[in-house]
Image (cartoon, rainbow over all chains, first blue to last red; front, top):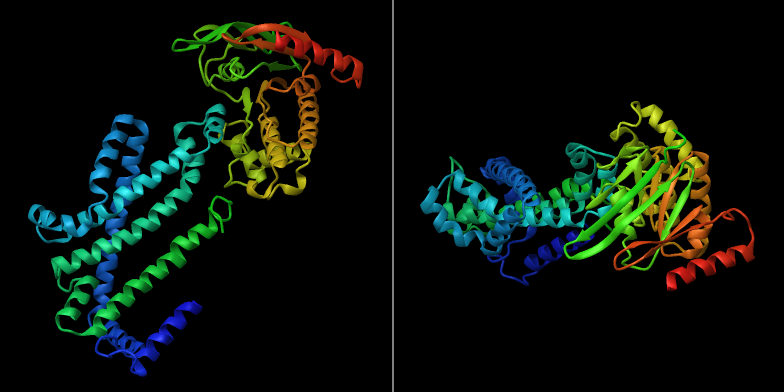
Length: 249
Length: 247
């Protein structure tokens, strides 16, 4: 937090004291005022909610798919081998690289957005879950077998908890990648729906050379990222894996 | 009932592909008895324990628990592992004992499971650590908690795969004595796999010395002086087992 204040003060000073051209970097307070206005009196608030809603849905679908595919991989070596091949080919492909193909196949609508987000999240999340499954100590699984736990109890009483460190790591990485994918898609696709999302807002800011708008959009994304880390992922981690000694301080 | 051994291993053989690991292993484990299985690495003693636990099946022979075939893992033949990671890190020490009691259906009500768990944790000297998470416990305390968990589940046979091998000498000695005492207290028979002749002599009533390539029983040595602090006798038995192992 202290570093954040220092960096913002430096930004303000750099612009106010003429160290940088204010056309390239307006003072932080100017951007903050613009952000406030756009958020509550302009379209930015709705556009932020639009983006959040799309990313949450895409993330949710990715999570559900990852759970199913991980379970299939755990059940069959052939399916895991297929996943490994697909993952090796597709995971390194940036979302932007596959966008033309997605546009041609699915057109420009929210389905295409979901596909881009799922592509960003799915491979890495499954990889984390599979690594997590392999890392469960054999003694914990064998103890469950030894006392005759049903597959459901084995999953709900042991596997889910034992997977938590890798699940959290996968969700964290996936969340970042979902946002990257979404913002790229919104910039390429333009306005989807009546107002579009944050990526479209930033894109239009650049198109009209309104640097304060571009920076305001970026700040919103950063604030959402910080909030997700502090209150969601960090909160879950403090209440679970850190408390249990499964994640180091 | 008294004539039927708690555990009867009858002519068990096992191969992994072309590798013959166990050949025609037979012995009985009686009520309130502890048997140690000792032998060089690769003599099949861990495989034998896993077959008794029904984690693996033998190619030939049978394992009988109280006279009935034991072919599916159950809490009646319960394994105590060497790994410090056998406890569930997301549960407290108490939770680690309560959860399996309820999940395995050994006890129906949570309050009853809690009372039983607290008693067994007291047996192993962990009353002051019931709310601690495993990562805050020492290796010896983790193994004590695992012993308490096993006791609470009241198995017919406790199967121990070098459970104290990763502990320092003093802690190991304390846990050997503790495990022997609580097994006696609750009438639990035990099968202990170990590399250590000393551990076998301190804990077991009888010692099975295994040969290898393939693993088979070379000799079964009685240890009537287990509880006697009789150094000359202990030395004699140690020599006898060591000679058998060297042959």
